[in-house]
Structure formats: C-alpha cells, structure tokens
Image (cartoon, rainbow, N blue to C red; front, side):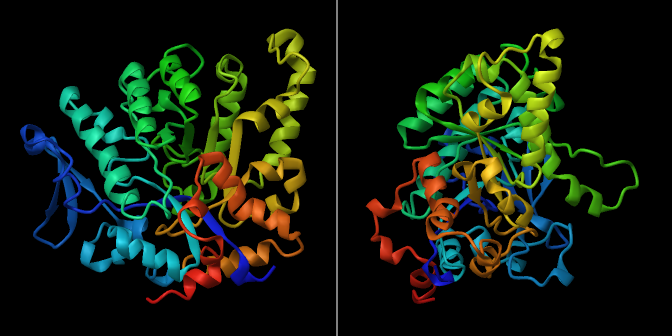
Amino acid sequence: MRTEDMILVSVDDHVVEPPDMFLEHVPAKWLDKAPKSVKKPDGTDVWVYEGNEIPNIGLNAVAGRPPEEYNIEPTRYEEIRPGCYDVDERVRDMDRNGVLGSMCFPSFVQFCGQLFARSADKKAALVLLQAYNDWHVDSWCGAHPDRFIPLAIPPLWDPQLMADEVRRMAAKGCHAVTFSEDPAKLGWPHIFGDHWDPFFAACEDEGTIICLHIGSSSTILGLAPGAPIDVLITMTPLNAMQAATDLLWSPVLRKFKGLQFALSEGSIGWLPYWLERIDYVYQQHHFWTHQDFGDRLPSQVAKDHFTFCFISDGAGIEQRDRIGPEQITWECDYPHSDSTWPQSPEALYRQLAGLSDPEIDQITHQNAMRIFGYDPFSLRPRESCTVGALRGLPQ
C-alpha cells in the first residue's frame, strides 16, 4: 500500500470552541448565564462563566506553528489557525492532512464537562451542557456528517441525568460520550461502588462508547512540585494505564458485560506488559484478593471492553499481536502540540512499514469505523476517502 492509498480516521482530535457557539443553541431565558468569550485589554481571548475566567487555547492550538514557537500561554483567536474553531476550515485542514474522519474532544469546558459540573447553578448548567452537546452534534459534526464522529459530554453531578443525556444524544445519532479516567479526583464517587450504574447501564443499552481521555481527572501522575513540563508530557499515557487498571479490578466490567471504553490519547506501547501483569496478578493472588473472572483471564476481559489509540508508538505497533490489532486505532490529535499534522500520513506510514494491507486498513480506519459506528462510505465513495483523494481537493 502507498501512503496516498491509506484511509485515515482519527479518534482523538480537539475543537477550540468558537466564541458564538452558544447563540443558536441556548434558550433565550438562559442566554445571560451562558459562558461568554471575552477579549481582555491585552488582546487575550478568555471565556467567562459564573464570574470565573477560563483561559483558552495555548498548547491546545499550535497546529501549523514550528515547535520552536510552542508555549502554554493563552492567546487570541486571530493568532491560531481558523481550523481550530471554524468547522469548514477544520475540514480543509483535514483534507490537507489526508484525514477522512475525526472525533473532537472539547477544550474550555474540559474533557468531560468539568466546567459545568462545578457550576453553582446546576439547573442552568444542565441547560448549557445540553446546548453544548447540541452545538457539537448539530453545528460542528452536522456541518459535515461524512467527516466527524459525534462525542457528547455528560452532566457528571447526577448519574441519572447522565443516563438521560446519553439516551438523548443516542437519539440524535451520537454514540460516544466522555467520562473521567478517575472521577474521585474530581470530587465525585469512585467507580468501585454503584454510584455510576445508571450511566453505565444507559451506555450499555445504547451502545455508547465511554471515552476516557488522559487528563480527564484534571490531574497527571507523577508531577512533583518543581518538576519540568517534560515530566508531565512524558507521564500522561500512564493516566490511561491507571484508568484501565481501576476499571479492570472494579465490578464494572463484570456487571456491564457489553460496556465499551476507549482509552483516548493513552498510547499503546505499555499494553503488552500491562496485559501480562494483570494475568500474573490474577493467577498469583486471586485466592486471597477474591477476584473472580470465571474461566477467563483478565487480559481477555480487558480486550473485550477496551480499545486503544496512538499517535506515534512504534513499540506498540511492533507488539500489535499481543495487544490485539482489532482494538488499535489511530489519532491525529489536531491541533495539540503532540499532533503530526500536516504530515500525519507520512509519519504513520513509517510506523506501519512491514504491515500487510489488511492490517494497515484495520488500524487506520476499519477499527474506528466499527467501534464508533462511523460509516462515511454511505455518504461518499470510498475512492474519494483516501489520503491522495483528499489532498487532491481544491484548497
């Protein structure tokens, strides 16, 4: 297979929300309570909500800049690529990168809607959260339904409301929802009890995938006081390892046998050892820890419930058969600083060297389409979905 013949679907990208996003989706009586995009005297754009200022952008939107110019400071919409916040320009940037499909995580409301979960007025927060989801599904994904996989945020403060929102979104064709990799670190109950059961049950019933993005606990493992930022960047995938470990040993996967989780931006190179380790722990210790997977091994259960994704992970690709190639997906991470845009096809092709064409198709798009119920071929011919075809479109 040639680079230009690949079909790429990214299961982890990000949207920098446009300043007018709430205008068409919030009922008039609630509009004064909606977050407002405000330009400060120094020209910086921030969101203001319930009297609090939420910085935006920074490393969230460095696509197109050379690495020498990366920094973590908030900036202005005028200083970032329009593809970060304008959906039509986003699709053009996807074309430039040869990427067919994309699932976009939120930015200023945080990965699983932590902003609204912290609201003082929870009645207003629910209205605004639903408006956010409607904007994402109807205005962002709906503008180009052949190019996006919709993703909802949940009202974390009430598991029954979460279940209701999962079902409301499923009726709109959205079958993916974000959740925290560790809700206890956000001040909510942990996953080892039954607090979240209404949410999990709704996701199982609706076939909704629960996406656990690294950092969705608003914490990063191992970041000691005074540690350089390199420590944080290096350690972030281990958040996914902790989230998967918690879920595996909790009752959740045995109680909800059809529930599916996607470990978003968690990489895959750590998985072969983790899968080996959980089996060893089970075989060595389950007599006194009283874990019981019946006639199955934990690694088998994990592969039934988890899917994984990577940006750049040669170690994981080399050991794909130990991970389970049918569970591996790819991500671009546009417009974050880890992204390979606009040379993603070339970067990915180098990592996939030596794989057969069916293996490449599986990792680059078929797994993502199956897992997330994404069917772009029903809306556009397959031959117009390749890297070469997309890059050949007028810019």
